[in-house]
Length: 114
Length: 114
Image (cartoon, rainbow over the protein chains, first blue to last red):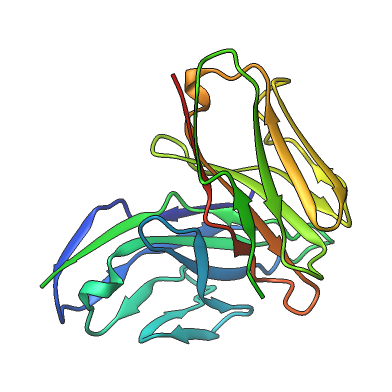
């Protein structure tokens, strides 16, 4: 079946540090991959996506590359800010058929200290 | 657009009482999702609708939970009777044809059952 595994948190960094949050997946076919972010007290919102192998999604300084050979979609940012403190969710949708529901990782909490 | 609207934002109730959560999706969106978020189990998909029709309710925990979508602009999730283990944040999300990949989340309803 389809599944997403992401690194456990919490991750605590100092401002301007480099961020990596690991995400690996198991899926049949050719899934699309996503990172969603949840700021405190809010719902989730799409951060970036990649719909085919070798695509790079990017937004707000965050990047993730769809690596089919390693079944990974790691989230990176070169210099984090306090405002990046949030929970980050990796997810996939299997493009086979009409079933477009998202399969979610458990989330990784990030705290950035000034 | 006002985004996905959920009410109430907070609900505190006693065990055994009926609870009704409400959701108004973004106008024009044809998919609606109900999720539950807890620390222990993360984000769980409970049920989703397409054009007001329930497509997959395999995530609904038990018969105490029911969901309806009487029209394109309104959905309810009902728990009867409620139990303390139902305490969680419940999110509604919607998705449209313009972008079949992105789900738009509401702010959530924090339910506490005492």
